[in-house]
Structures are given as structure tokens and as C-alpha cells.
Image (cartoon, rainbow, N blue to C red; front, side, top):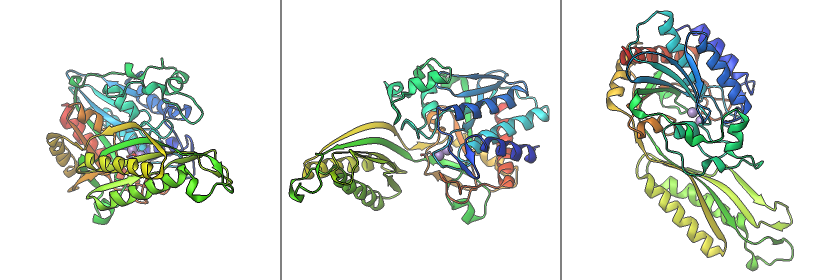
Amino acid sequence: MIDANRLERRSAELARIAGRGTSVSRLGLTADEQHARDLVGGWLAARGASVRRDAAANLFARFEGQGEAILVGSHLDSVPEGGRFDGALGVLCAVEAVESLVDAKTRLRRPVEVVAWADEEGARFGVGLFGSTATFGRLARGVGERRDRDGISIADALRALGEKGDPAAARCDPKDLAAYLELHIEQGPRLETAGIPLGIVSDIVGNYHARVTIRGRADHAGATVMTARGDALAAAAEVVLAVEQIAGERPDSVGTVGEISVRPGAKNVVPGECVFSLDLRAARDHDGLVQEVLATLTSIASVRGVEAMVDDLARIPVTPLDPKIREVLVHATRGVGVDAPLLVSGAGHDAQNPALSGVPTGMIFVRSTGGSHTPREFASIDDAALGAQALANAIKELAT
Ligand code: GLV
Ligand code: MN
Ligand code: MN
């Protein structure tokens, strides 16, 4: 039986780490995220799990058994000024699900391991799904040398957390895993609109992240006539609007420029350089979306006589989740009285890495309100407890 009070108490305790009111700014690969990992690791160590971190700062808490393991979890980092539930609820519910099985002295044949993936959001270094990508051997070369705004590299940040600074050394063999399960808030309105507390994820959209640098020519804002400018920000502005238009015209596609900086950054200087993020997602023809945006970027730069450089940070294809695990989740959610609809996830999830590495993977969505990546995001304790019970049902079915 899920202990909803314990779940609620722990949720509040976790939300106080780098939290203020309902706002949480617990960025990946920081001391705050480590503090959250230590808290979660402590809960499970007290129940007899062996707890370890891997070279990418992911936390694993394992209950031994025989054969391939069931891995279950989510992430503990947030975006800046994010909410209390994105990622955190998945870890809290994984802990609660496993503890409820321990409380009930359930005999599980397989090992069951709770995981808290590091730096899922990629808010600090721009590399989303960082921890799970490392563990499944999917990190691009040289990622450890990526730097935050203060010039600190991922390798430095890992060393500051007590790791060796080589995230590629974090490895697991997908063959050692029988299944990966992740519970997450829905982050959108479909379950709320349908009046249903839980959903099951069928597919996760493809996702492309890049950092674009436009180099124009810094010059005097008064003395430079309009026809003689190489304004990097004006070019970037045109790209931002093109992203909005292209994604808006393609089916099941979204595109966002969420971060932008201008150099030298003064009111009386024509912008000489502009660096901005690109986030492009689609449930179908993701490659087509990326190609169209990149081609448009090239053409805008050429017409305006500025230089555009694209630094690819991540390209994750559309990810279908496992049909057999989906069936297990259908039983598990029916077991708590919910006829859970199948949903496509528009958000990216760590679950993409095990799924793309051949691990049978499934996800449960919990109804959430108030959007997500903001302090308004919310899931009720009743819905969370129902999700945790469904997760426990699924773990039990898969592990016995
Ligand atoms: C993670 O939250 C993402 O989808 O960007
Ligand atoms: Mn998120
Ligand atoms: Mn998340």
C-alpha cells in the first residue's frame, strides 16, 4: 500500500532544496542537485538498498535479486524557476512504489533499482537528458568540455561533485535490464480535460537542440546608416519568427528559441554577435522540421550578409515505447481503477535513452495542471499516490 502521507512529506522536503514557495531552481550538476540525490539515497539506504553514483552523477539504489533488473526513476533537477513536480515526482513515486513493496515484504525475484538521472533539463550546459545519455553510452564526443556561462565545464562540475570528470565512463549494459519504467507529470492539459488521473505514454517526440551563433558587425548605432549594417540581432529576430512560422505550419511540430544573448550588448552599438538556443520537436518527420529550419537560417544569414554557425547539442529521434510494457501498464493502471488513455509525450524524457538502447521501456503520466517548467505546475497528492500504486503494480508484475 502506498503511504500518501510519506509521499507528500517527502515531496515537500525535496521541494525545499533550492526551492522558494512553489518555485524550484535546482539545476543539474550543481550542489543543490547533489543535495537532492543525497536525500533520496538516504531514504533508500535506510531500507536496505545499496546506493551508488556513476561517473555522470546519476544515483542508483539497488535491491538485489536474480537476473536482469527493473530500473525505475526519473530526474531531480529542474529548469530555472521551474516547479516542484517535473522529474521530482517520478523519483518520489519510484521510491514510494519500491518502499511499499518492501513494507509489504513482497518477494521480488529480479533486482529492482531506483535511479535519479542527473541533469535531465540541460539548463546549465545546454545538454538535455545528460545523465541517462551518458549511462547508455550515447553522449557525443567532447561533451565533458562544454561550458556554462561562467566558463565552468561539465567535467569541472562533475569533479566538484566528487566524480572523476569523465561522464563517458558512466556505462550500463542494456542487456542487464529487463525493463525501465518512468512516472512523470503530463505537463499538458489532456488528462485534466478528460478528467482522468493517469495516462500511458505511447511515443515521445523527436527533439533537436542547438546553439546558434550569428556573427555580424558591431558598429556605431548613430553613425552607421541602415543600409550598411550587419546586425546580428536583427538576423536572429528573423530566425526566431521563421521558427515560429515553420513549426506552426507543420503537423505535430513545435519550435522554440528560449535563450538569447547579444554582444557587446549596449543601446548605442549595432549588435555584433548573437547567440541563441534552438529547440525543435515533432511527433512525425522530425528530420524534415530540423532541415527546414536550418535551411531557412542559412538563407536568412546569406541575404543579410552575416555568418551563422550551428553547434548541435542533441538530436533524439521520435521514440516509440515498448508495446509489451504498455500492456503491463494497462493492467497496472486498471488495478487502481483507471482506464488510462495512450498519450504521445511532447516533452523529452530520460526514458528515451533506454528505449533507444533496446531496453523495454514504459511511462506513466500523472495528471498535472498549471502547465510545466513554471512554479504553477501542480499534481495532487491523490493522483500522485494513484500513480505510485500503479508503478508498484507494474514493478511487482515485472519483477516476480
Ligand atoms: C524536458 O523537460 C524537455 O522536454 O525539455
Ligand atoms: Mn522538464
Ligand atoms: Mn522532466
